[in-house]
Image: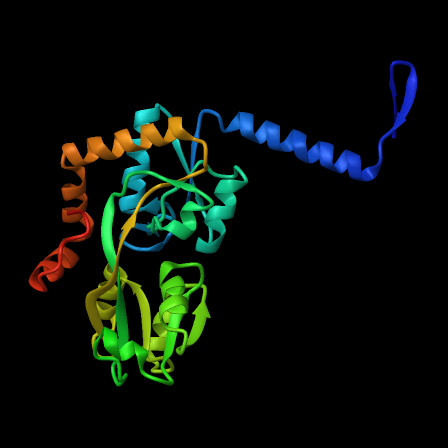
Length: 271
């Protein structure tokens, strides 16, 4: 394609045209989203984020997102994607926030920013019924086989703390649970709420060892440099705590888990 600039012809290559179209598309999409808060989540983690019977994103994360949208005066739009794609999507500007039971740790802080935490939990163990794993110390047993979910802190912890274990890396909760209930792995390392829920679904094939291997906190993920948005997110979370919104969400979504944790002398996730 030939264009004229200052009376002189300029030839546009196919690559140049392609890049220009990508830039224009990005700018158009960006402008279209200015009045919408785009939230990235992996909606496979009830009761925090899941797809309900009507095909809509639901759960604790939805309630948090709506309150942040209220603080900003913007409607909320969810993008449901695989967990390991959330941080790249945030960095590239496809989404504005991550609200997806995301652990705020130092490794992730190197690439993104975080709000103040809204959940305190810990890594724990979902052990197979006939597994040798009876406590955290048993994880160092030679020849152990463990399921881990890709890009989670459970995977990170196992790779650092249990170099002798054979790790089976999978990309969904369902796949990890299936390995445990079939006895093809000794255990799965994941967060306390998930371990409780999956044990409740498979009480004859699994054991829940809830004493935390490591305490963690969940927070909202933000692109670095968005201090204005971070302040708004923190204000919304602080208001929710002050108004008792998290206690109400616990009543709605997490009453059984709260009672079980308190029965075992463990602090509840919103405390």
